[in-house]
Structure formats: C-alpha cells, structure tokens
Amino acid sequence: MRYQFGSACDLSPCFEIQLEQEFYTIDPLALRSEIDPASAPPPISSGRARRWLVLYPRAIPLGIFLALAAITALSVFAIETNARARERAIMREYAQGVAAALDRSGSGFASYLRAGAALFSSLEEVSPENFDNFVRALKLNTEYSGAEGIGWIPVMEARDGPAFLAQTRISQPAYPDIFPQPASNTGRIAPVAMFAPANPQNRRALGYDMYSDPARAAAMAEAELTLRPAASGRIVLARETSGTAPAFAIYMPAVRLSQQGDGRLTGFVYTPFRAREFLYAAIDRQGQGRFGVRLYDGEVSTGHLLVAQPAGVAARETVEQEVTIADRKLMLVIESGDVPVLSLLSMVTMVFGLALASLLMLLARLLTRQALEDQTRLAFFEEQHSIRNSLTRELNHRVKNTLANVLSILSLTRRRASGLDDFADSLEGRIRALSATHDLLTVTDWGTTPIRAVIEAELQHFREVLDDAILLDGPDLELAPNDALSFGLAVHELATNAAKYGALSVADGQVTIRWRRGEDQGAEAAWAEVEWQETGGPPVASQRRRGFGTELIEKVVAHELRQPVTLDFAPDGVRCILRVPVRRPTDFRIRDR
Image (cartoon, rainbow, N blue to C red; front, side, top):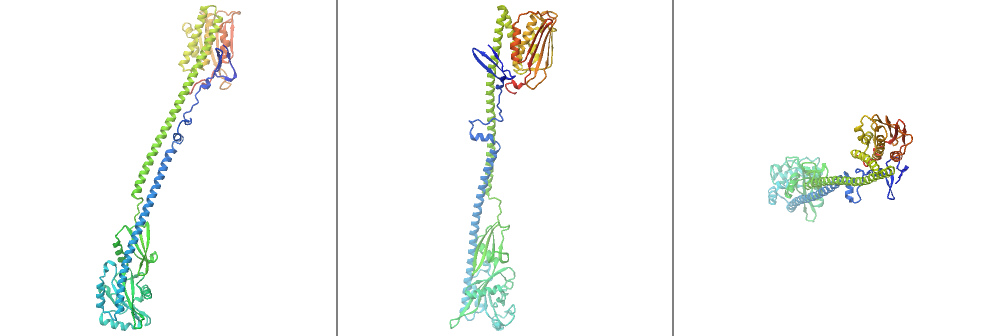
C-alpha cells in the first residue's frame, strides 16, 4: 500500500490508494450536485407544446385569449357587415316600393288630367256644373292621395281679362277679380276659372293668375311645349288652401284643333298636391316601417326638400331612389334610424367568444402551471438521483478511505508488535479510535466537526479516570471530516503513548492541549495549530525505539493533513505541534443544505 499526494488535489481531501494492484482517485469536490431546478432546461423527451408552456408560462395563455378574441371580433364584424347589407337591401326594397306607389299615384292623376284636357278640347264651352259632374264621375279620393281636386285655367291675353270676368260672372256671380292684378295689358294671363269639387276651400283658388308664380309658369311652359303632363317645383298653396305647407302641381295643356288643322292652346287642366299627404299616402300603401322618408325636388339639399318623415334619431344609413312624377325628377331618400350598438346575434357571438377565450386562457394557465410543476418535479427527481449517486460514490469513497486506514494501521501494528497479544491490543485501540471519530462525524452528518469534540472523543476514557490531568484550551474551530479522522488518530496515538510511558502513566502527570487559529493567508490557507504538552511524567529516555505511533503521526497524519508535524521527545515531557487545515464547507460538502 502507498499514499500519493500531488498538486492536482490542492487542499481538498483527495488521495490515491492502491488496493489489489489497482489505483483509485477520489475527489469529493466532484460529488457536489450542480443541478439548479429553476434554471434547468426542459428535458429532451418533453413535447414541443409542453416546452413552450414551460418557456412562456404567461405569453401562451395570453396569446390564446388574444387569438380567440380576434376571431370573435372578426366574426362579430362579419355578422354586423351582413346585417348592414341585409338592412340596406330591405331599405332599397322599401324605397322602390314607396317610389312605385308615388309613381302610380302621379300616373293616375295624369290620366285624370288627360281626360279633363280632352273635355275642354272637344267642347266650345263647359259650364261649372258640367265640370263639377265630370270631376265627381272620376271619383277622386282627394283625402287619401293628397290632391286638392282638379281645376281649369284658360289662357288669354291680359287685355282680354275684363271680357273674361264679365263672361264668367254670368255663370258664377261670385267670381273674384283676377289676382295678382296684371302689371300691364301686354302678355298672357292664366286665371283659375273653375275648380272641383266645389267647396269653400277650393273656391279660394278662383281668379289666381298662375303665370304670376315662376314655378307654376315654368311647369305650364314645359307642359305646353311637350303637350304632356308636367309637374311644378316646390310651391306653397297660400291661396288654394288655408295652410302654407309645401306642395306641387301637375299641369296638362288643352289644345283645340282649328278647321285648318292647327292646334291652339286654350288652357290647362291642373291638380295641386299637398306634398306631405301625397308622400304619406304612398307610405301607407307600402306599409309603415321603421325607416324615415324624405322627398326632394331634384337634388338632395335643404332648399329642395318637399316633405320629410324623420326617423326620430340621426340617420345611420340612407338609400336614395329616383322618382319621376309627370316628367319631373324627384329624389326619395330612405333613412334608417335604428342605432343598436350590436345586433342580438353579434352580442351572443361576442359573449360566447369571450367566454370561450377566457375559459381556454384559464385552461392554458392551468396547463402551464402543471407543466411548471412537472418540470420542477422532474428537476427534483434528477437532483435526488444525482444526490443518490453522489451518496453512493461518497460511501464508496469513505469505505475505501476507512479500509485504507485500517490496512495501514494493521500493517504498521504488525511490524511493531512484540507478540500476538500486543498486536491485538494495539490494533483494537486504534480501530476504536477510528470508530469514535466516525461516530462523532455521523452525529454531525459528516459535516464540520468542532476540534474540541474530536479531542474529547479520543480522550473520553482517560478523562473519566484522570479528569484533572488533561487540560483543553482553544477557540471554536471546525474541521473537515477527513481532517478530523486523521487528527483523531494522531490524538489517539499521543494519548496511548502518554498512558503507557508519559504523563498519564503517573499520578502527578498532566497533559495540556492548546490550539489556536493560524494567520490567514487566503481563504484556502487557514489552519489550526494544536500543541500537545506533557508535564510531570517520567523522564523521557534519550535513546528510544521508534514505535508505530511515531511513524503514524510523522508520516500518515502529516501527509493526509498536508501540514508539518513537530514531535519533540524532551526529557521533561513529549511535546507535539500539529497543523490541521480549516477548510471551507463547500470544499467537502456533498450538497448545500
């Protein structure tokens, strides 16, 4: 057996022993676990999804929630877009229905006007009674359609006005003067001669010169030019009715053919319309809806508004539909006043989508926590496995060290024993010394051991008998396990020698053990200096045989402690000075607690 010490092990308890021709190198520093559960990467066997859950424990649930929220938002947007498209289709259909109703109403009254124009074109003279009977035969529904009735307007020169009044008053004694009064005797005038049905309200229109109003005059000129019914722009029936509501009129020229075949304009048959009733009649035919309706004369602007049925709130959607009444272009505008934030289907979709997103985010969060817990458990199991392997290696290492110490003690004891009994006694004492130190290390869980506890464990049997003969003095210092074993062997040999031949072999003898901490030259160079001093014992012989204890202290202990040992056999008593390393716990601890 041989002990080899080198710089590779530095100050750690590392040594090489040879057992049965094989060399073993033990380094406890390599046994420390380096696994950090918090920083350990996911195992290779983990799935990619689980690895992402571990690496991004907050981002994955949030990403799932945002993705589902975005899908929900897109779904709600699509539903709302379809709802608006459907609503616009309904509005357009409604606009077309109202426009068709207006067109039918206008076309119907245009037919009545054509019939009236034919009446005045075919007869030289039409009495008020005949005209009233003719209108009654048409069975006009003036209350429903918004029409005031049908009137006759002869066209004449302004200078013929007095003759017209004289002739008309024969059949209508209460016929009023022409108004507004013509400014001169030049130009044409078109006073209202007859109006049916005859009632006090309609008689107010008699005598009114249609050419005095530019809007009416323009419509009459258009009808004369095209020989077709023509509608006027916005007018106010200030004289024809009792109100000032917007209105319009349709004029149909009456042309009488001469014997030469030439046509001569004799006048106009016309019908005034209250714009509001005219529009409401068309809406009633189509059916009242939730939409607002506006009717404009031509372009859509405030100045051209004829009538409006507002939706009640600000319009959100509008649809425009062109309507032609007696060759005049009107613009029908349908408004949607519904302002729901979201439709019912959109609300249900949004609530369901957000609930699902929240549920999946919670589920992902739970899976993330489970993955983290699994990762922590896996790291813990790996650490425990590493610790178990380290403990196995440490146990193997310590058993080999113990066996090496036993073999060394056995070999030296055998060479120095004088007989079998001497060999057995010496071997038993030294094995007991090792056992005592091992027991002490076991109590401290093979951690640091106080130097005082090591000395007291080795001198326990002597102090029970010779308590006052052994003095201990020194500060609290901690020793590493291997250093404590070696130091304990040295104390045992010194105590055995003192009990056989030195101060403890006589009644007045005394042993003083003092220790102090050496000067620090760095964290790894700290040491404890222990002084063993015997006094009052038998004189030490100058010529003596080197025993096993001397060789054990000077060779084995010195080598294992890697510190010099001073052993002085002075005549007044043995004096021994040992230096024991004071190491950091991390230099020999398997793992940090």
